[in-house]
Length: 177
Image (cartoon, rainbow, N blue to C red; front, side, top):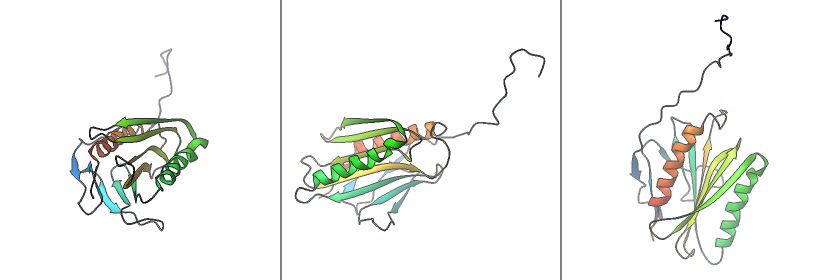
C-alpha cells in the first residue's frame, strides 16, 4: 500500500441506499382531497397539538422521513393569509439554506402548484402548496422532513426519490366537494 506515489486515505464507508421501485395507491375517500401516494409510505393522521381534521403525515419507515400535509378549507378572503403563511414557513429556512428555488408547475387538470426546493442543511428540502381553480374552496400545503442527523448531501438520492413521489402526489391531486 505504501509503495505507490498516489496514496489517498480512504473514507470509512459510504451509506448504501437501496431505493424501492415506485408504486402508488389512492388516498382514502374520507378526505376533501385525493391523490396518489407511495405504497412504501404509511398514512397517519397528524397528532400535533395544532393539527386540524384533514392534516396527515405520510411516513416512510425505510428512510425515516415524513411528508406532512396540511389542508385548510377556504372561506371568505383567507386565501391570502394561507399563502402568506406558506411563504413565511419557507422563508424561515433562509438562515441555513444557501438556495431556495420556487417553481410554478402547471398541472394536467389546469391547476397550478408552487413547488419549492431548499438546498443546504435545512430541516425540510421540499415544500409545496396548491389551491383549487378559483382559490375559493381548498388550500393544501406539504413539506418533506427527515428524522435523521445524516447530512443532506448524503441523503441526495433519497431526496430525489421523494421529490418524484411528491410530484406524483401533486399531479394526481383532485378536490372532492
